[in-house]
Length: 142
Image (cartoon, rainbow, N blue to C red):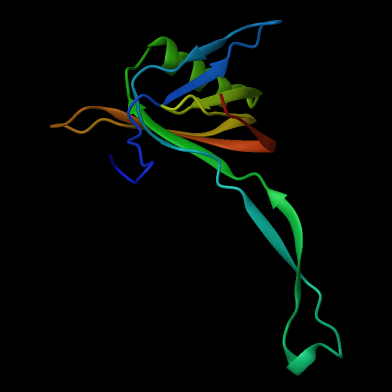
């Protein structure tokens, strides 16, 4: 028996809502690396003339929801390529789900703000997609 709960990311799925009402989530094809939203808490300076030992003081500020990025095989003209480039061009925010291998789901509203394909001569074509998150991430544990 092993003492770790570590897992590999194999099986992680990125799905984007199709925009319909009620609509469905559609899995993006051939994603191979995912970096979920990287929330950061702003620190607001609260230093004053009597701060102990002339040391700056900080209080927690607002949470910045951050960005999510993923890499996938670039297949020009594929349904995933068309959907992502359309979203980038429109600036529309959509619901996104990242489903991890243990079925924990992170869901958030985001807009495609980066779509960077690469077509090397001697390797597979890939694309790096960046999503800017708006609002909170909902985490659902099965």
